[in-house]
Amino acid sequence: MILIDKPYISDFLIRTIKNNNFKIVATQEAQQMISDKSLNWISEEEAIKFVKKNPDSPIYSNSENSISWVEKNLNDTKIPHQIQVFKNKIKFRELLQDIYPNYFFKAVKFENLNSVSMQDLNFPFIIKPSIGFFSLGVHKVDEPSEWPTILANIQKEITEIKGFYPLEVLDTNYFIIEECIEGEEFAIDCYFNKNGEPIVLNIMHHVFSTNKDVSDRIYNTSKNIFEKNIEGIEKFLQILGKKACLQNFPMHVEVRIDTNGTVTPIEVNPLRFGGWCTTGDLTGYAYGINSYEYFLKGKKPNWDNILKIKSDKIYSIILLDNRSGIKASDIDSFNYEQVLKDFENPLSLRKVNFNEYPIFGILFTETTIGNEKELTKILTSNLQQYINLKKKISST
Image (cartoon, rainbow, N blue to C red):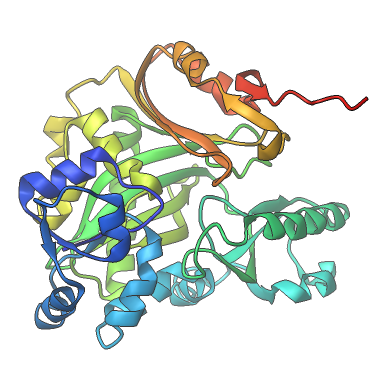
């Protein structure tokens, strides 16, 4: 069964639903986003009855906006509890505290951030909303002298981003302060099958431009990234699945892996893969597999065979986020055509209303190993070269 909600559903996911005749819940939001009446629509009442009668049946959602529907309609099932354990970063840290006993974290109310004592904190640290999305409100603090400026930035950002997403997706009432985790960052799409076995569907290297960068600009996947990390990631997921008693449950996991191969979790996003149908669609471009179908049908990829194909390529998701310093209200247009010209093989470009969300679009690319300079260039770009400003009318 599939729950669809804003902000976005890809044509790839719609085709997957249609071709497999998957049940899709006929919420008002889903019907506004999808015009195809031939899909296997079921009413909300039917969906509730189905889940209660089949509590272990797989459920997938394209968006965390649907969490409110789950909590409202399935509150006497185990699903809302499982979602909250992961979505709330404080509860998630508490779940794994016995496995990572020395890991420092602290919960703070937003209105109490002004009174946080720097003497009680370990530097450097990361601060972010306890329930968050798309790196909104996330900052790294290296030393006490940075705190006043970062606190002011957080307060400004919260004013700007409130209302983008429902509270179940982005709740800025509480923040979590936690120690910085060493190592390279990776994002994993996976699910736990009916037997509780973790099935890895994608592994992506989250690349940063500097050690202060906390953005979501680039995620890469490749044969090398998979082969180097899958063993350690599967071992970690086995522990996680047992701790949370997971079955037929999809998630998007973010971890760091240090030079010793130690996997430390950052966060888990439940009931979905990457937001805006990004990482779930990427496996289709990169490896020719359909992650949505694999989960809902309980299939397991044969990575030994899959990774023999296109071994000289890197596949990337590039988030064209507005870090230009230019307000959306001052922007006339964004030059998407020029963006496409700056890449060897752009696969898909999704344009986003930058007045509604703080991003211009999402780009999928294929890059030949040896040509990574095109990825490095966009990673460090503020995108100003693609922005056309509104003409100012002079007053006389």
